[in-house]
Image (cartoon, rainbow over all chains, first blue to last red):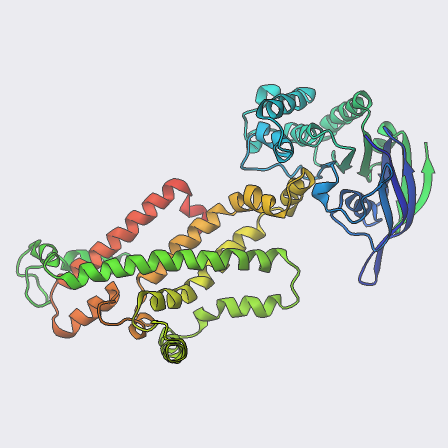
Length: 217
Length: 248
């Protein structure tokens, strides 16, 4: 677990300014939501925290560790992608175990922690299924388990509910919120859905045109 | 499309001494005669060896090239793409002549035995397999969601681990299809090989051509049939690992 500090972070692509002078402190264990219309820079901000986009200005700190120049695989964040991005050639179990195997843990530890993570999202019974044999909601939960299994310092959610139907969205939303509370993991979620944002956030950051417009509780 | 193959099958069992119509009777002796003609067995062995090595070489160039074309943000992407596909645009005879002259120059400069050797043939054939490997693998790679590779990196896999554990398994159908096409293209090549073979190093298509200069009997149909059967067998075996209908 860790707090996150963004210090005057900015990103320009050519002459397009995606994010401008973005400064924010995210407390340890906080659930922060970035809200805004598409193209407002919220996903770019999330991807800068994950390390997939290099900021053109400012610094990013996890706790007091400066991670601005670290590649994604050295940051220990758990990212849940909008389209889940499960490994289609691996079972649900192997998907979740993937990050643990990269950490060179003992085989028994990998198996235990992967199953624990699947149990957390109530999918331990389907561990041996391939992603294509799972429903959208189940795939989403595997993606969540995969991100949580590595015990990330920060959990990042990129529009995690946008591919689910209305009823399921409500369910998964509540589940994510409860899990986050229970594990106390610092979480940043990106969404364009106001209601969704209000129902899960400890704190809400409204973005527009690459800038923070409003911060509210 | 199957009609020529049917005719070849039929011709190979004609009893006529010279290929002609109608058949005077039917016999399998042309197949038996093949065993007494070492140039075909030798040609087959050479073609097979060159095909396997050229396929491996083509993949060794084609996989990294496809990754660079699709994944890296290159400034000269279009130019590189055209360059890699160019062996398809140049007639085989022209490439063959150019390679022959080039090999002569290189041999004079370095004394490496290139012309009329297996290594020369393999190098030439790698050239004609590259467009196929790059096309097929790049097309496969375009269909792989980038987020999946990002997910691997997010979970702690560095670039090499991501390539080995995620990207390569996902483009396996493209790689298998590329290997198959490369082998077939190399195995059946005539125009390019004409300039690169030498005494004792003759590929099967050239052995067939040389035979045709002196005789026209159903032996040729029998050789062709065996060649077709072997390629078919290769495809059937490949199909067990990857559904070919999905990759071609």
